[in-house]
Image (cartoon, rainbow, N blue to C red; front, side, top):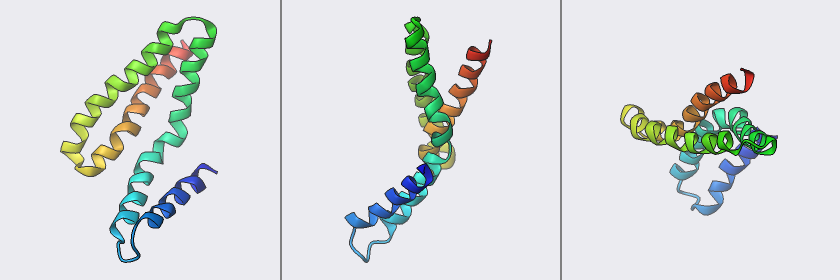
Amino acid sequence: MSIGAVSHIALDAQFFTSETDTALPETTSHALRLFMLVMLLVGGFLVITATWFQSLGPTRPASMITLGNMAIQVHFLLLLPQLLSINGAWLAVPISSVALFFNLYQMVTL
């Protein structure tokens, strides 16, 4: 269902452009594929883990997940566009989410 939603969003980009403008729908489709590549799998885990910590009472780990995610994203947003140009900008958030995922997985399983 999520993959269908991503393709639907990419098709909706054509609604906002003229029939002769093919660059925006192509760019949108490419960017969404890069961004959603990991976010569909890992993004939910981060939200559920933060909610899990909040529901158990220790709000500090939940806050650290949120703040840690932002801190990691800033580093990737500064580095990856220099290495991969525009694709680096779109991959910064998914890659930072994967890095945080592995840290959280170790924290939850220990």
